[in-house]
Figure 1 (cartoon, chains in turn yellow, cyan):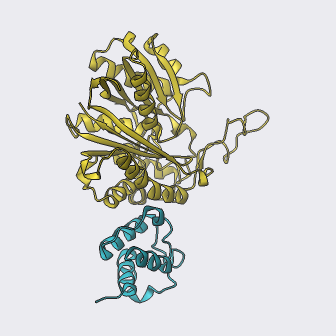
Figure 2 (cartoon, chains in turn brown, orange):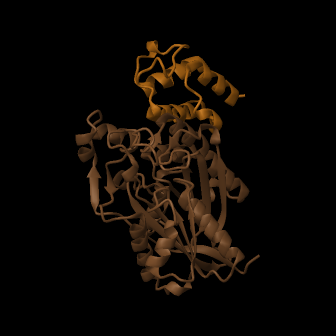
Figure 3 (cartoon, one colour):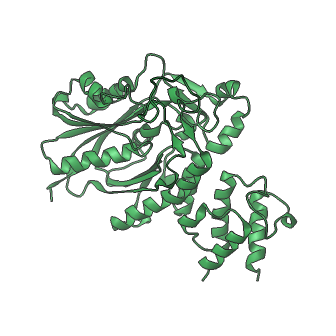
Length: 331
Length: 78
């Protein structure tokens, strides 16, 4: 056992300049109304990357903001983990580009893709690594997406949800008893094909074929996604509490992947948790994939929703489908 | 005391905003136009409150017709 914990000691985020309202969207997608989008998702607007933005540029800005705010010398960052499913290139990893941008020459790099559960997965990997290897003094955990470039603007199953941005958490050593408590992950692969983006994968390479609307846009079966989420999200939260010897009432604050306001409100009601114990920004930001938990955490902390000593539970659902939940005691 | 069937009918009528006489034992997601994903979440929470039960998460996505709802509620009340 270590003499210290690994905690989230700083957060920040970046959102691109362009805002797309439901009214803007419905000029292109004429079979739905702004009110319909709000009733189905709670989403009023989303952030769309500009032509000059890239996943690495957005992530780099967010990382610089947190390092500057916390006055951490870049040489002391020993690990950069980036959760994304819309990196700059198929390879090299986007975390390499961010390491280069930051001149973080002492940092190991890792890209991970567990879709919208990515930020929770990356936090868990980083804290595990830091608990094993004391030489890793600080870690940057970044969730970033630029996936609006992969959606069909006329597909209401996807376009009404997706938004771009980056969220970052700075991990460091904290007194024993604070920091990560535990994480729990579960995967239900029975509906593996329900949310997918096939184009460019080794089963659907670009060579010798032209652009295909079916293959080269994100596809989402809304019904399967919804069924998976309402079934398994409460289960992974309860499983985490059980393995951590925590009761739901012991959790001071809950932050979810910001996919759909109705889903978050349902999970809170199903677990008998008052709504003032969560924070949502899906209404104003939309679904930023792997970045959403990081951005929500950044805003929640900025707005003073999380106090020292609070136990905070992060939870999300990602394509596949995979589910993650992680509990942290904040310093 | 209301029986289970009449309570289910009352809840479904209120949640889906359809006349009580339109809810029958053959009612399902296919026969009630207003039974969408959002209303389904409201149905689960309303049934839990009406019967003071907790519907297992594993069953939440399956309760797509009257008969299954009745079956699960009777299981939960045992």
